[in-house]
Structures are given as structure tokens and as C-alpha cells.
Image 1 (cartoon, one colour):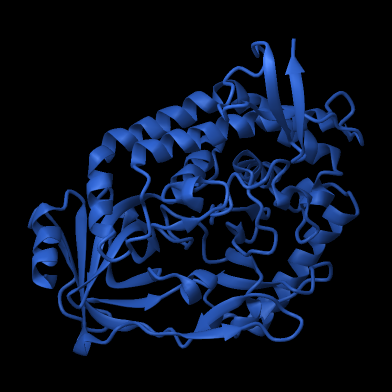
Image 2: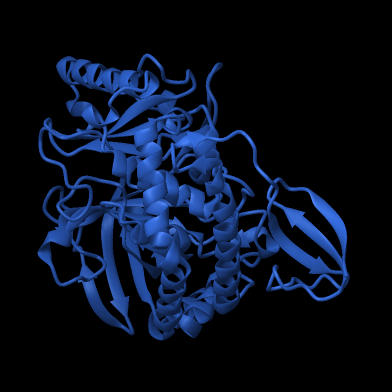
Length: 459
């Protein structure tokens, strides 16, 4: 049965197959670790890289071969990654590090070559989605990031993965948040850091004066092993100076790239994410002469779970509640929304049409293979998932249209009142009304942006 399944995957799969053979068939391992007192979260440790060889094939044709592992010469290494996902997911997320740079997405540009790649699981738990799961929230988030015009948005493809002859399921093969000419493009004097809930699981980190106690900054670039006392002192000084301008409502453009900060939060507001305590708040400075930038965006598991602003917009865990007291910032944010609003839904719909054209039935066929290992996942077809995500986007745009009225753009002072707005209307048969401004006579349930539901008779 196992041999037959593998033959089916390698011969019949219409998406690429990553076949990984580690030295001595050692499987990547890890240990679950819990936050110390005063901190939060569950993560993993002892997740060391395991060396081996990786091939990528399609219809039996070899697209890539790392060759046997030889340090810094050939082969690859793989480890389990993530925090709560690494600790609890049945389908483990992995990080791959090639010995030699290569573009596993096969784009016609050498600048895309890189050593670091990720394999992200297909399953995402989300209580707002059908069956409380989705396979395409990553696509939703990446789509909005591109539309907004974030400086860099990762690219991805779907792949089937085997490790030492054992089928691991269908994955997102995706670019990680890392430094690179075609990724986060920063020079030797720049940096890439993360406002991190899981700092307690890192050897090197720093805290700033106004940072919430349960978070600290951790390093993406430079590597933590390369961080000297001078580098750390300079980062603490620069971040404290930026925070001072933000919290004292100074000229924030002296320290931060306002547009990138506005774009980052608008991505989350459009998606309606509600992950307050999570990490994945990345900041970078492209050179020592550049302002602090926000981004890229990452982690879209909690999309569409908010009926209001995203929690990042209003949570005191990060800078945004204070930034929304700054008229310059609000002006940029509102202008950005007004610029993209007229074509936003059309662009989202077009992007998902392209996803359907590229994958379509291929996705569903491969999900059936995936279900041989994860039988409780992926029971909603790709087209149905796309339709559901598009419906959620329509709802979020209506919500944001109402929320944006909280900001008086004539003087850019935030108002305190907010009239409830309708997010859904259903009849007594449970059918959702598509046109909220033209509801036929009858008895209905009105759901509002604050989560309340009221009965109404339309005469």
C-alpha cells in the first residue's frame, strides 16, 4: 500500500514532488517548550537541522537535485520550524536550507536564487470558516499584501512532500522572511528584526523603553551570532528614538517610513485579523541612512475573525493605537484606503480567478492524496473555498467603509461615536440577503459589526 501510494504521488501528481532523503534516515526532531513566568506562548527547541538530499520532480522529470550532502558544497538541511504550529500541528512546518542557492519556484532570474525556503502546512484552523478550517488564507493575505503594494511579498507554490519514503502531505513551498536581493533588500548596514512574543526562546534579543513586557525584539539580520554589543546598543538607541517620536506625537517621518507602516496595518484591517499576542511584526531598515520600515506581512491564520478593526489596529501591544493619534499617519492611511477602495474587490477577485485557473481540479485531486495521511482536513473543494473567501472580503470591505467614518478627514481627529453597521442579513430559512439596501418584505435577522443580532420586520 505504501509503495503504491508513493508511485501514485510521483507519477500522477500534477504538482511538483519534493523528495527528501536524510542521512541515516534521521527525521527532524524537536522538544516542546513552555514560556517562563511572566511570558506567554508555547514553542519548540532542540530543532536541529538534519542534512540530506532533496530532489524536485514533476511527472517523473527532475526539476532540481541538490545532490548528496556535503557541507557548503551540495545537498540541503531540514528542520521543524514555528512556535505553536511547530509544537502542535500534525503536519509539521519545515525550514529548508540549501548548500547552494537555487530558485525552487523556477523563475527566470538568478536574483531569486536563495538558500532558505519554507514548507508550510495546508491546514489552518479558523472558527469563521466552513468546518472551522481553510487551506487558502495564506493566499488571501499574500494577495492583499501585493494589492496594497508592500515592498516585498513572498511567492509560493504547492508541492507534495516525502521524507525518507514517508508521505508528509501537500504543502506551501514559500519564501521566508529573510534578507535577499529579491526578498527584504537591505545592505550590510541595515537590519531586519521581529517584535517577538517568543523572544524568551532566543539567545539574543533586546527590549526598548516603551515595549510591552511580554515582547522583545529578535534578529533576522544580522544573524544573532553576528550581533556585537555595539550593534545591539545602536539598535536600542535607534528604536528608542523612533518610539519617542511616535509616543510624543512628534515628526514621525524623521524616524519611520510612514507609508510602509500604514500599508502594513491596512493589510490587517482588510483581512480582519484578530491575533493580538502573536509575533510576526517585522521591521527593517534598508541601510543606516534609511528610515524604519514596517513589514513584510506574515501569518494570516486569524483572517476574517474580527467584525471591527483588526486587533493590531487597536491593541496596546504595538505602536498602532498611538500612531492613529498622529494626524500625518492618519492622513496617509485614509489616502491609501481611498486610492485602493474603488478597485479592491475587483483586484482580489481577479487574483483568485488566477489561482483557480492555475490549480483548479489539480488542487482537489492532490488534496485527496493529502487526506490519505490527514483524513480530517481539506474537505471543502478549492472553488468553494475561493467563493467563501471572496464573500468574507466583501463583508470586510463593507465593515471598513463604515469604520473609516470614525476618522474625520477634514481635520483628521478621531471621533468617539460610531453607528452600528450591518454585516449580514438572513431570512428565517437561514438564507443570506445579497443586497443589504434592497431587502424584500419579511422577517429577518440583522447582524451588526459589534457582533449583536437583532430581529427586524421589513415592511
